[in-house]
Length: 93
Image (cartoon, rainbow, N blue to C red):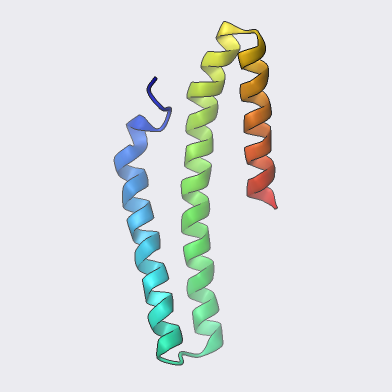
């Protein structure tokens, strides 16, 4: 089975590498005793970068996995809808 994000995989990996770089930068800022507000600004940017990845993955999941399951119907469709709902709940906490 092919995952819904396969068409966006390169872009997702690029965003994740960027977020990874931001986190490494935050670590260096802490090591270098950077001003708290400047660190918090970078934490916010890294958080937004990861949220962007999460939203793209969710969109891909809804448009591929959930859409396919609803076309097929039955208990798999119900399971995919519950799964998506739980993922959304985790994202907004």
